[in-house]
Image (cartoon, rainbow, N blue to C red; front, side, top):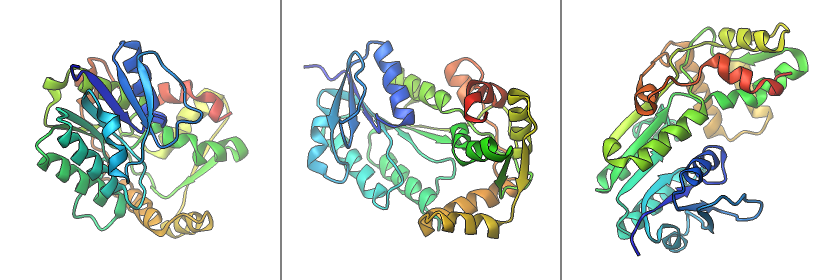
Length: 288
């Protein structure tokens, strides 16, 4: 049988499920990989396969008759070993192309776990000899739908440690659209690294204004210190490695290191990325 399928790791997650929907709509045969097949949604032209990235032997069935892999998993303590297992099996299975969702801060020499782990995996993928496309989002808009949205609903205020620093976040719908293009028109995107952003860097004052305009009530952004942010995360029992990483992200934004804007999304998709205002309008119920 000809290898013409696409394997999607992290298929039950937010970005993975969007990608599965796009591939199904395009009538492309897809193997959707998840740790647990319970409560999964079936799509035409796709089938679910249960696998554990930490167990290499479970991965072979996920790439049977596949030509390409979308590589995404959570930031577990063993993520480097897990994603290396996928790359190793992909090489054995003669996979032609891996599209990896990475981090905008990826750095194999970083002292912070998340950028370090993504940097290590990127280097391993590049050295594997498999054609790669690496997607580095500069921050994801949907992250605002958690604690920020909760705070806005409760008190019409929210708290962050980024001062007036800006970041060009990208909508995860644009990320999945880009991944779809890279997987389905692969030769154009072989051996490329794309830094994904919206067309405009914004700060949290801008986010508060956008929310206010959509829900027609004043929303206030309240800058807090790194010390307060650290205390808040510790009270939520977050792992120390993640607290350290998130504080580093906040510091980078506060210091103006995350204002980078690229045209990668616009160039790959042939249309502009979704804006802050569009995102808030599309998700208004989260903030009301």
